[in-house]
Amino acid sequence: MKNNKKGLLKKHFFPYFKKHKAVLALDLFCALLTTGCEIVLPMIIREITSVATTDLSKLTWQLIVSLAAIYAVLKLIDMAAGYYMIYIGHGMGVRIEKDMREDMFAHLLTAPFSYFDKTKVGQLMSRITTDLFDISEFSHHCPEEFFIAGIKIAASFSILASINFTLTVATFIAIPLIFIGSIYFRRKMRSAFKERREIAGDVNAQTETTLLGIRVVKSFANEDIEKEKFNTESTKLSKVQRDSYKYMARLNSVTRLFDGLMYAIMIILGGYFLIKGKITAADMTAYLLYIGMLIAAIKRIVEFTEQFEKGVTGVSRFAEIMEEPSEPGFGEGDKIEIIKGEIEFRDVSFSYAKEKGDVLANISLKIREGENIAVVGPSGSGKTTLCSLVSRFYEPQQGEILLDGKNIKELSLSSLRNAIGVVQQDVYLFSGSVIENILYGKKDATRQDAVEAAKKAGAHEFIESLPDGYDTYVGERGVMLSGGQKQRISIARVFVKNPPILILDEATSALDNESELYIKKSLAELTKGRTTFTIAHRLSTVRNASRIIVLTERGIEQQGTHEELLSCDGVYKRLYETDRKNI
Image (cartoon, rainbow, N blue to C red; front, side, top):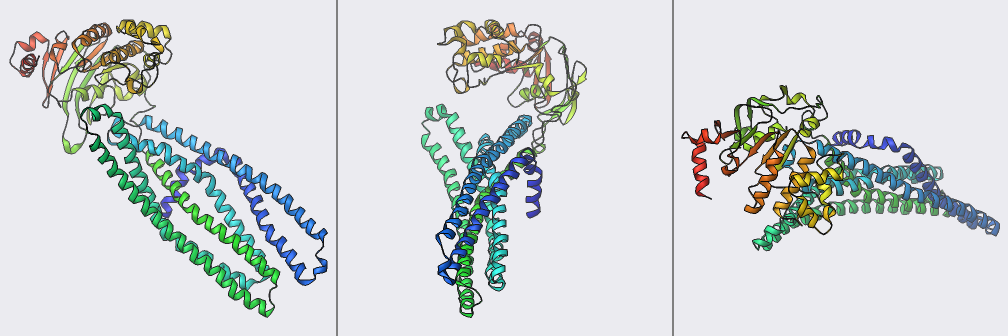
């Protein structure tokens, strides 16, 4: 674990210090100044005590004022250095946290869909916020606290050894015993803190799931069920928190045992050396002050062990995300400017997991430029998966997909996805204004572009009727708008993007009849001149497609026009008859 921890910090933490080496060096210099000021005080007290006990007549106001002035100057230095350590030093930690947070978020954006399929968003939120805050504290305090403790131990040992070497060695022998005794509990604490983070992430995920689905919760009157699920996760978190504090308490007890041993040694041996005249009362006073200072430093290190373990745990969880592989080909491949929209599947097979078998098997299909293809079939036949492969949201295990005669794996993901517009059943609108959501389709689009796109999507009139028109706030996930309104805004977003390839994934299935009529008109306008995939359950919506692909678990079962497929007995005809009965 020790080697793993070193490797972890070396690879995923220390590089962030490089940009802040000067700040760190100055921070440690200030730590040296504050520690030096603290170390000098016992020597001043020793000097006064020595003079007072040997020849009281030499203890003059001039000596006292001189020593007080020296201490006052040192205290001013200590004050300035302490200000820098707290303000600038913590600022360094904040900047390191910012760099790591931005790197983590940027890396998450490169992760494949499969990663988000198996990862809870609440866990990711916990890593971006709580974990990185602990790393911020750790990055500032870790070098500082160990540096200060090292100086205090070394300086105190040197000064006290010059007074009485035997007493110093006997007293200091407890220090390594403290650190040896703490190793076991530190390992237990690290394990507990890691588990605590995982469960805290689960609590976040449970909270997010419940609150995002609050309408469903309330519509089913399932508040008690959600409360019970939350309380279960909360109880787990409480238990592992208690465990971590149990190990912390044991570590603290070990520390108290050994600092008591240090005082006991000093009292017994110190008293013996006083009787023998080998040390003076002034020396004993210095010993008491230095031992008190040392014990305070050691206690601070032990207390910091909690922060240290939190920081290492945070770095570990940061590393887990940063070592997650990016999407295959992310940032690579050829950029294409002109895309016609001819797509070909060549013997393509795909499965989400080997043990579950293929979702698509040996699919071969060619779509002409500008052709409107409808993909239909039973649930679970792979309709959405087929279209997801075109956008490279997932990678086929076998075969290849060509765009304008070129394997899409050879194209950059950005240029490929910029060429594809998607309108889904479950519309996602970002928290913000209507205009911001429409312009999301294209980085350099103007407000006028958004208005024109809204007109084509049949959304302009209702947008104008909103309280602030195009600047109206749509709410979290667009909750301020109806389903049909959200869908028309999403279509306007694709109009702004103006892609040569279009994927309509159940775009009207969740709408009422009136909204569906509006959307159909918008989609008819949108599909003109574009290569289009239309995924649908309701077959009445795909009757005018230039070609219908019937997909089953056996692959492409049938293909042809609506009339051609109805003229023969097959899967499409049975699906169509079932669909008509359900109308």
